[in-house]
Length: 552
Image (cartoon, rainbow, N blue to C red):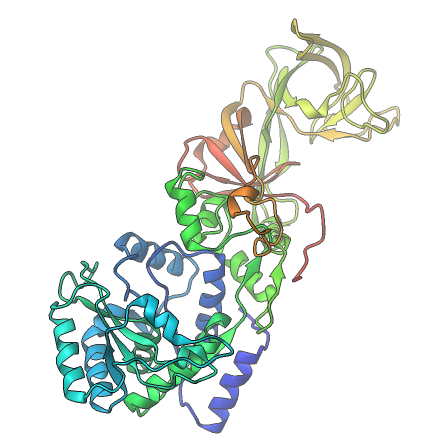
């Protein structure tokens, strides 16, 4: 994968050139409290491709320091998604919870250095004491406890002698700092809760801002690259590393988050969509989760290409989802085999074609690939075409089948309308046509021009299937700009999925493998669904209605 330069690569190249690091080491540190989404793919892409580009190592580290939200289900799903993307964690797989002993040891060290203290203020009192952006905070009345008292209290916290919320361990930094994160932040809290890996061993847990730099340092991470919301946390990251006294110090660098139009990437909200049944699981094809995109039919290559084209910068932007669709469309146009599926079938009878006759017409599996194989389509007297390819009262310049008109059956005969049969409601149930039997995949001998070409299937050689067509899950383009008093729920798209039943498909699709991708002729790109038998999910339409935009 050829990578274009960006400011993070510039930093790494300068560090290597100046000898500040010998070999880079990066990591992806997801919290196992939900499934990864398209925004996660950017963090994976940046850290993984940087390690590969510069001959370094890449770690997967689960940030499982908060037992109130985490579950082994998410642990397993994260690994599946990471390896599906091809981001093999060759540096190792780690768990933040496996460093709890070291975190506790370093917390004791900070107490001994006079850099941490046990505080009895409640959460509300801590917020009150913290101050504002324009006013400094007030020191806790417990800030000047002796080292001995703090060590004793912290051990009692560890031993479960206090209730949840009774006290915290805070770093002693600067309550007047203009950076709110340095105003004596809590670095340990009490939680009497079972941990998915550690069980009941601990009832005190380190907070992320304390645990993360320790984990980076212990793993030898050189470049801790994370999203921009952690920029104001970097001074605390550095304070932890410096105060503990690590010899080899990791450094944090920030990049802009990936924001995509018509998309919400709050794991809390996505979980609620799952739990309330708005979607049929984390892997619903409308979800921005990686498992949802996989089920929809997106490939790892298209997702990484999307992230690459969206760019790596520090400035806020919203990337048009059309860019993601363009990436998969370009890939599948070159690779996907063509198949015929008729989503709204209507019967056509060729009146001058013998009822017992059968013949085959050859067509390419991919006309864009000169080396692609070919397949044969069975032609019989009774066929199916798509209802949209026929009109009794056509608009001007309508080049499909119509009264008095002719149309080419793709790679087969030209047919001419004779009559249409209807039911009691006036719906067309059958179209009678005659074929020009001299036009077997050729032009009429009299030189007349026939402009329209439509796809078809033999009624004897097709199967029934379902086709699911997806639209954007949210109607608002910028989900970060929701009006006051409204929520994401107010912008859920009621028409985000349409399932068409009774579709007709080439018989060979009966043997399609789960997840296999095709171009359905004149319809779009589709993937065989992983949950519903006989269903194909539309990945993307053949052409976008507007050009793909990089950012807004």
